[in-house]
Length: 118
Image (cartoon, rainbow, N blue to C red; front, top):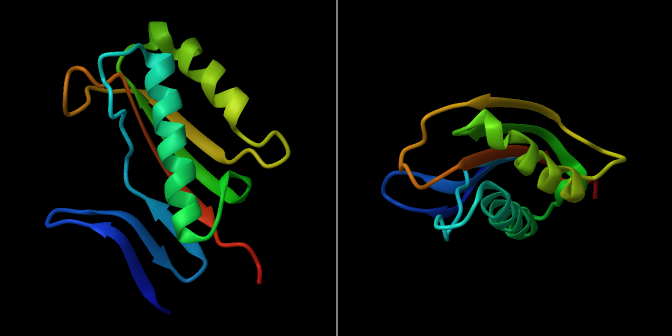
């Protein structure tokens, strides 16, 4: 099976494609001065863009992992998620409270998607 990387740096890649699986690195907001809902929106836009570059989209999500810094804001993130995710094809998902690498980040998301059948 082939292995392809997109947006690779010294430490990590943003996307790794192995066979028909597209793995995204954890995504965080570019503008972390905003609330959890807006950070979630930014992240989902980044996920859309990265999936498109890899040749797939949110309708092919297999799984998602979500880390939030404060469960008191969890509903705000879920509202944004629910408006974005495909209701016909919601992925399996885990969401936990965690301390993220930078204190201004309120949410981080990582997904795996399948490439569409050709």
